[in-house]
Amino acid sequence: MPPKPGYHKELDSHSMSETPLAQELTVLEQILARKRAELIADKTLLPEAELLKRRQPKRRGFRKALEAKAPAIIAEVKRASPSEGKIRDTFDPMLIARQYEEAGAACLSVLTDKQFFSGTLDDLISARAAVSLPVLRKDFTLEPYHLLQAAVNGADCVLLIVAALGDTELASLLHQAKELELDALVEVHNEEELDRALAVGANLIGVNNRNLKTLEVSLDTSIQLAKRLPADCYAISESGIRTAEDIQRLRDVGYRGFLVGTSLMKQDNPGKALEKLLGR
Image 1 (tube, rainbow, N blue to C red):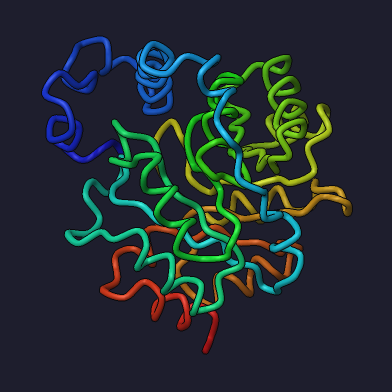
Image 2 (tube, helix red, strand yellow; image 1 turned 90 degrees about the vertical axis):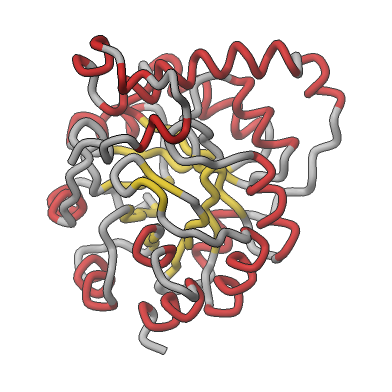
């Protein structure tokens, strides 16, 4: 599914989606091109040397929190997405985070990408301040600067998308995340990406059921890759999870964690929606 017509135009009147070049790029390629440009601006406004001077909050232990619950839900806080456009009219990350915690979430995921998800680092800071749960910074991590940016703003975990990184970059970012005491959720979409993730030592694996090139979603992606996941990996299924039956179907093939966003954020009370998802 392509991004909703006019969606990027609402966010930025000079969006890439309105240019001939953008029509030749996949959604992921458009996002990464924009992210690289954004990175240059971020480094100009706040150089890495300045980031290094900032105090880093104590980590809360993302994987440890996941392992303490079954099923473990990573409940997502986000305003918008390329496939859905604007998801909700009222958005209070602190309130949503509290609702999720009360409903039994193991961790939070907070979108911080500006252009395609309307997110900000302030959303992450606000959500984390409202709860005791560990928080994943959900964004497109490309360089060590992004790791440091996540660390000083309170993230407990970062997302490393195999499709967006070369093997050397992936291995280096995984190592540097560990040095910053950040857990790293390494996201894959197919067998080749899974093999690459395992080759660099990733053991917190997220299988995204959304094709980042087309935005189509199918739980079959997680089911097909389940048999290739090593026993020592903590496996998380991401995207397209809407019902308790979906979770049970995925648990039956070995998944212990579940990242759920849009289906919760579309509801008036995301916390109540999470309770229902957990069968409470």
